[in-house]
Length: 345
Image (cartoon, rainbow, N blue to C red; front, top):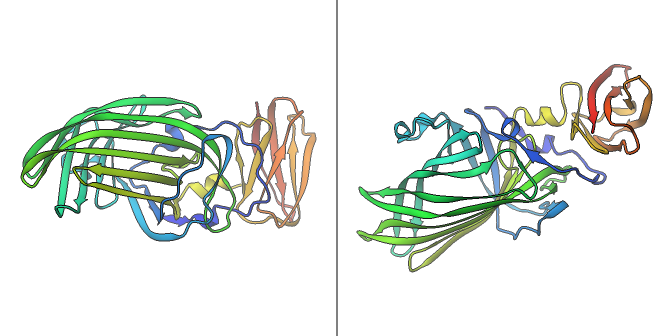
């Protein structure tokens, strides 16, 4: 799938309007076969506290590398035949995960993991089959929603098979705007925190060894994006020696469709829509001095108007206006008009 730089999406911001509650859904947030997501990586920084209408400022991150995730047909997973209900496979070249899309969300049914244990120096490839699939992401999901799911399955490596038991717990613990490196505009996000704790039986030095595994992850989801726009994680293995991997990855490029959501073919995008009191309007390019933005009610009366200049986004309040259908109309410097419907709750 083609990608385009996130910097073309994140437009220069002048301020942060109050943000309404965010809900992510299967229709808007489930990936599809062929999707590719390129991420920058950065050193770990502790995520801020959760809450309502929070500004998550990651603008000072320094890139240390890149990683790429590909969403493929289930046949890309070597053991896919054992999981006929699987719908998707995701891989970052080292690890591969097999998923089923169900009525409750995105569930992990199997995985192949490449693990490096420094002492004794050991490289282990694990094939994991979940007898009870893991609910990685319930959908729909709104702020303060919580879930938990037991981990049950088998782990196979070098012909030996052990067990995997544990628990994953999750919560949508915050929403607000996220700021990424590059000086772009804030992006509305829902933050989802997951905490996985498990014990895995794997062969180390020709012996089946219980390994304690813990992973804490904070994922920031834009309401229309098929993977998190940023993730913060800490992953710990303990088999007598503790090995910890931690870091941040944030979107470096976006699938075709993301920029179109933010600035539609009409030249601008609306978020949220439906809206409560405040709508954020983003433009594919600055409309230019003299361009006029208007909000019209169902009778064609102008209830708000704004001269645009060189701004590439703005927020408008319709507080005090009646709920119903409105139209946002942009007239450019050549007199060409484009419009989109806006629903006020």
